[in-house]
Length: 629
Image (cartoon, rainbow, N blue to C red; front, side, top):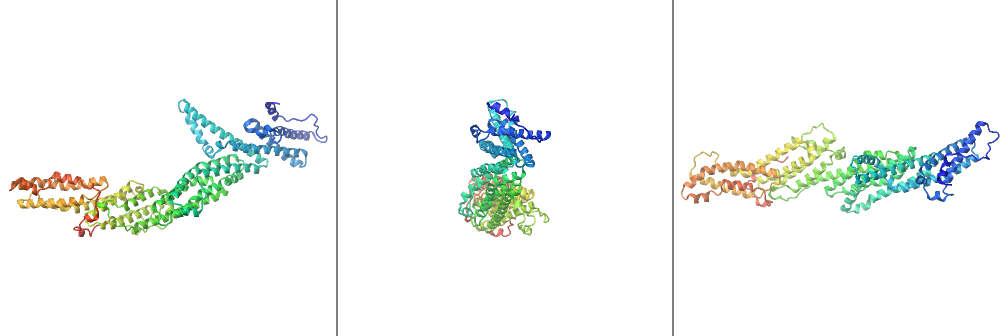
């Protein structure tokens, strides 16, 4: 008999010609009995045809793959058979028909178990979580390809997308049909067992491929920082893939296949995903305390923040994916990791502030440049500001700095503002204040007071520039930046007055007053000596910020060059007219206005020299130096 002929039998209930209904049945009962018999025999026809025990063809062939329409008829006949069995049980639990139906049901369930397993196994590539979780994206992508001009590449890409989507959708629909049939027939346990065994192996394999492994706390303690950092980087990528693809896709598939039973959906997904999810979300808890231990480099806080952000940023997705009560242990583990990370981050921040307080290095930066402490602290705070959205939650509830310790006008924040964002702002402002206090004390290592002010100028300029060019600006506010830039200008003005004021003072205030040749000569000599001395000191100074450097040089030149040019143009003729003439002029007047201008333009370009080059002649004028705060 051909397969087509066999297939045509599936929709016909055959009744043997020698069959006779019981004599005592009423006409209605006879019709019902005949209908029951027809349902059983119709189901028997297709079930026996796909009996793995009696047919070699059925044993090696997938019904859903070989003949999809017949597979759907098979499902319908099994459903009809189950309804008939329910009716027979209520009427005659010991009837031969019920026993025959029961045997047929066992054969059918064995067949469906085989089909269920084959579909799950043969379509792993199309039922992997990535394919399932991106089905809607594939549909969108397929639509977008239709906008491209006709060419081989666009057709090929579009065809591939269509193929993946169609195979995935078809396999999922087949699995749901089988699952619904088996569950309705009382074989949910067998169906779920197959599903769990195959899908759990896929989740476990996915976690393994993402390089998330079970690690003991003792092993973590022995790990070097380089190894830890590599594992954290792998874990960060693993969280992203797991939440967006692995667990999300598996839940979509599980919800689809077992749509008819919420209890089975919950049980299935929870058991499949629990072990992998606990391993994934338990990772940060083991590493948090190891990273935050005392004497660890403060920069390690960023790995802690990255892990915190990875979980906190995906928290809604985690709650949605693991929403079942049986999955609460996964949510609890993720929350425990967040708490452990929060504690470690707060600990590192406390150690960081303590480290600034305790910095006792007496290294004098050559030329009054930017101190390494300033560079490192501002770099650290600038990077921390990028995590302000999670730091707000992390610092909530921890003791804030005492606002009374913040100097008036240093930071304008209302005492009544206790919002988390305000608390975070105060903490950043406080840490910068601690730095500025330390820099203010380090300025005393310079013997020359003008260099002290240049040191303060350079360091405060670096602080404010980093704050303005990073997310610190949003935290601290434009008013803070403006006031501290004004402070930079004050320091720069004091530096210019101390470093170059004595040079300018060598020129007469009243440039029209009559002066004798000897007085003119003395003025030129004093100016030349003072300028040479100031230039010798200040040429060793540095101003790393190009804008600030140009502003200071231009400001000095604007005051000094015009005044000297006027004096030079009006008074040099007095010396030139005297005995010795030009020879005497060259010996007395060592600099032309152009010489002064050229030498000033060369300032602040050297790398600088040590503190030993500065004398203490102006030390007494520094006693009233204002602080950076």
